[in-house]
Image (cartoon, rainbow, N blue to C red; front, top):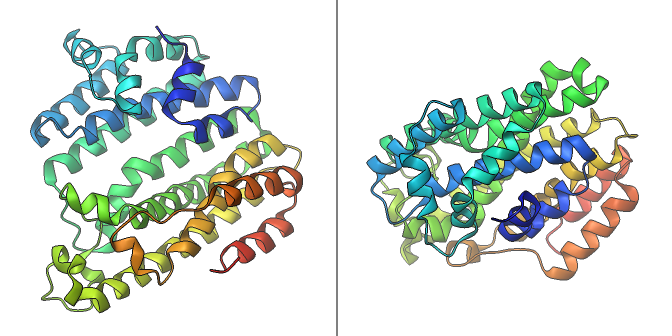
Length: 323
């Protein structure tokens, strides 16, 4: 059976790099939280199961976290055969839950409550299907899969960092926005792939023509409408990213490793958004940063990430399309 560190590295090298920056106890807690959420993702995104069964399994996963579920779900997870990072973590669910049981009670309570609520939110949306009439509908979905992660992390930080504890109420609000920022960028990046599985994360209210079916956005004759929708999604991401920068400013500079953990995904999101802005390629393929950009951003953040002034300046630079 793989160790938690092996599962982390094999399921996402990018997140492993960020989590490994965190100090001891916090690193263990965030590792377990990440892996628990990967199991939720496996159940939500599984392409071999009907939506009703996925929703049932997500609800049962919530009961597992509470310690009240029968063995059946463990058997189901152990039979996960897909060659994906999420399936790998699902096959090792017993190991992840063992790691959860070894955490301090306060941290364990945060993880159980947050991951359970997120999983139940995923189940609710899986049952209702991709019906996003207004921006508030999209925000509700993104809150369940990402905003709650911002809450989870803020609560863990507050256990270890007195200044975060004192600013907890404001940081919970900003942490939700941080999660929505990253998820909105993911929505933009995944427009073409999500369409293929029947989920188009575009509110009907974003369409310039109310008579246009959202599924037709990807047709050549709808290019102008699609670019209008893309512009609204990019503007939405920008608003949430502004809040994410405010969140970072509330983490003490002496907590450089925690700041860096939060800063790297923020900078990657800013740069990815810059590559997507006014770019019709996002409708047909994934648009992403180059490997040299990732290396340069990571290096610069490690050196200068303690400075809030520098973060604001660097974000403006990365937001330029030709940076």
